[in-house]
Image 1 (cartoon, rainbow over the protein chains, first blue to last red):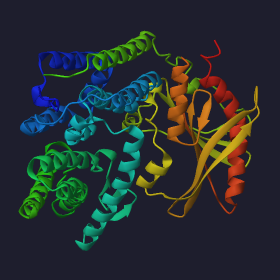
Image 2: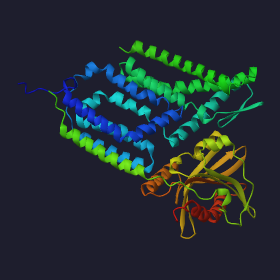
Image 3: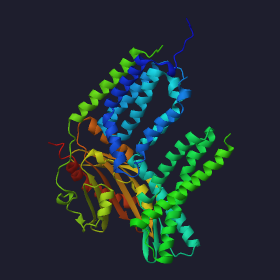
Amino acid sequence: MNRNHQTVIGTLNQRDLAWCGLFLAVFLFTYSPVVQSLYKAWMDSDDNSHGFLIVPLAIYMVWTKKEVLKAVPVRGEWTGVIVLLVSLMLYVVGWYGGVKTLSYLAFLGAFVGGLWLLLGWSVVWANIFPLAFLLFMVPVPAQIYAVITGPLQVLVSQVAGKLLFWSSVPTYVEGAVIYHPQQVFEVVQACSGLRSIMTMLTLGAAIGFFMLRSRIFRGLLLVSGVPIAILVNIFRVYVLVFAFDKWDWDLTVGTPHTVLGLGVFALALLLFFGLLKGMARWDR
Amino acid sequence: MGSLSAQKAIVACLLLGAAAFLVHLGNAGAEKVFSGTKIAESQLVEENWIPGGEFPMEPIIVEALHLDDFTFRPYRKGREQVTLYIGFYHTAEKVGAAHDPMVCFQGQGWTLGDYREGLFTVSGDAPMEVRHSSVLAELGGRRELVLYWFQSLDKTNAGTFGQKMSTMMNRLMKRGGANAFVRVTTTIGSESREEAEKRIEMFVGDFYPRFHRYITQQEQG
């Protein structure tokens, strides 16, 4: 008999998988109000619609590493029950108190706590990136959203205004409002670039995981999404006002606005993948 | 040979089950929705302040702020003039819908400075505290003192986080979810900031007791 036999994920039997299945079923039942609330948040707002992709991507991340994960030792630890208990308390308090973000974070915390309790810290650590990636499905709270978009709106307006000045377009910028002799352009919240930033961050995290090995490069790719999103948004506002001034084109509404947005997003992807290609060359 | 602990799995399921019970129990009670009179039909400011006409608000702004009710008008008492804005929400769900002036004023081109937090004590049925924030705003040579707070039922908060906490406590205690963003502004001419703030404090003294009764009317039975 091998007294040093250690259970690994690959040796879990049907009984073990049944317990995992039971835990998952009870977990999803308990958190069904949160799942419904998340679904509604993703459906109701373009800013959160990327949430639909997060769980499938996270599962795929785990799947691509299944051969490595099969060898991860399994040893459930009671420490996990502390994380699970705290998460459940935060869930109940958050739900009763109407603080949805707290409930959403508690949802993720309880899942991690349950994994830790049943399968052990080694399993949690081996899956730390997909688990952290799940944070992208939590909608940005309204107060934080306002705090971020306000300065972004002003930044985009100010820089676009400078570019327009250098292009001899007569404009005056006050806050997030660009005044042209014939039109007033307000960079509203929806045009602050936050949606692009969230999309680029999500893309950066996912693509970095699949295509880069170095953690430093993965981190760099992740954060590069922020300046790229801001730069292309500045460019979008610049083009919008420039086109109005030079050719009397109204790109602020309807199909032209959508096409401009898509074109600018394609530019963002171009910059992003260009950076990825450069990093991949150095990523040995 | 597997080694998942049945004991740990059972403990996890029991804890989850207990939380599920508590949450579904909480869902059984409907949230109290404010159903009092509209602000326009309520005399929230004492009669010694003469109200001006309502400033129009574009429907797109009303929608963006998710307002259930609002008022936005000037008041004058002798040579003192202030402008009152109340963005009112009937349910706790909408806490967070109001935007902090520190965020949205800059977007309109205002330069903000000298931010402070303070406290007024207002006499009414019982002494009441009004915790507020204030900031100096400048645009095109015009200077205004902007004083505001976030109301959650009978509690005032200088910021949105405090309002969130107050709302959470109200919900946990099964109280109503009515909440509001209140902003009082006054133009600063040659006077000091302190003198302008005194003017606002005087107005708040003549406004807040009635507003407090208005927002808590359903709690009074």
